[in-house]
Every structure is written in structure tokens, then in C-alpha cells.
Amino acid sequence: MRTFGGFTSGDGALFYGEVRGAEVHCLTSAPWLGGQSTGEVLQLRDLRIGLPVAPSKVIAVGLNYAEHIAEMKRTPLGTPLIWFKAPSSLLAHEGTIEIAFPEHQTHFEVELGIVIGRRAKNVSTADAFDHVFGFTIAEDISDRDLQSAEKQFGRAKSFDTYTPVGPFVHTDVDVSDLSVTLRQNGEVKQSARTSQMIYSVSEIVAFASDGITLLPGDLILTGTPSGVGPITRGDQLEACIGEWPPLRNFVAECPSRDRVAAN
Ligand code: MG
Image (cartoon, rainbow, N blue to C red; front, side, top):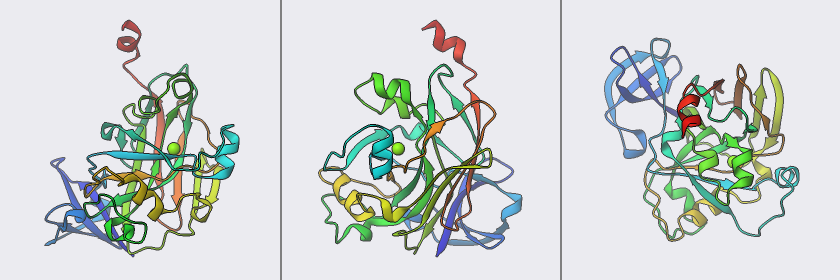
């Protein structure tokens, strides 16, 4: 397994690097674009972890675990259900989720994230993995009030900070049967395995690429298992997949509510 990330140092500029133990080996460009080592080696502890992905689009899959379909009182569709989340909703490791509408039920959803590595359009399930760069941990923060009130899911799941992702992207890793866990304030709320997904990674990539060009760096969220629940100000969320370093985020309320209320 190799591990890549996005980092900022003193000047705040984002750069990409490969994590090797306590070291970060800097890259000339994003790893999914073939970034090569610059030769510079920094210490991970001296860096701030930024977004490990820079997608042109974020695709989300819904209803991909049977127990989650049951808890949402939905029925299987017989085909993957996808929608788009705004890339501006991405949030890095240790960033703060800002609840846009504190009066609404807003839920956590931990998900395996796929990072595309090669341009893909109309790929078969057999070829799908040739177009995958790696995998990451993601959350699909969801405003349930708006999700049920509106016909499309995109807005309810695209508010700024509603897609935590990271801390890193992992390549050369078997994701067919990894644990998927979410802890809220230290308590396990979601616990499943990727082998319980109804549609596999290759089926999802093939379906998403059917008539839609997936570009290197694009991110696909593969659906959440059961156990979703509300977040409130002051929460700490920790999302884990397998033995990868966990994704940690905090929860606050959006400070711009006065402007929203005035609209
Ligand atoms: Mg989801």
C-alpha cells in the first residue's frame, strides 16, 4: 500500500506528497496526475493536512447497504442510485463541519471513497479498476429535512463542509472486505464491512462512467452502512476504514445564519 496526501506548510500553499512513515516526500503534482518526487522530504508532524483530492465532480451513491435501506425505510432500486455533491463541500481532516440549518436533522454517513486515476467513459466492470487511482475515507453529511422535502439530494448534501475526506488516499490496496466505522464522541455509531456493499467498486465505477466522463481526481462516495444519526454542535466525528489513519472532524453551527435567515 502507498499513501498520498495534500499538505500545507508555512506559506499556506497546498502541495502533494507521499507519506512514508513520519516523512512526506514532496511531489511535482497531484499523484493521480502522475506527480513525481521532487526530492524534497519533510516531516509529517510539521505540516497541516489539506484535501487529498481535487475532483472536478463528486459523485455519491445511495442505498448501497441493505441495513441502511431498511433504516431509511426505502426499497432497493435494482440499480445504483447516484447524484452529485458540490466539490466546494469538501472538508479536510480535522476541519469543522458547519451545520447550515441547525433546526434541521443533519446526519453523519461514513463511506468508502474512490479516487479516479485515469479518464473513464463507458468502462466495463472488468476494466473499472484500471481507472481507479486509490481510495480514501469520506463522509456524506446530509440534511435529512431537505433530503426528504426536495426531489433531488444534491443541495441537501452539498452545503459547505458537508463532505469531509481524507486524511490520505491509499493505493495498491484491497478494499473488498474492510471495516467501515464511525465514532461520534468516542461511541461507535456505524460499523460494517465493505463486503456488505450491494454494488461493488467496479460496478459503481462502470455505472457512473456510463455516458459520463470521469476525470483523474474525481471522487465517488460508495454509500453508507446503517447507524446514521444526527450531529450537533460540539460533536467530534472519527471515521475509520480498515487500518488507515482515521478521518477526524469537529461540528459547529454555520456562523452565517443571519444572512441565510434574511433571504
Ligand atoms: Mg451517502
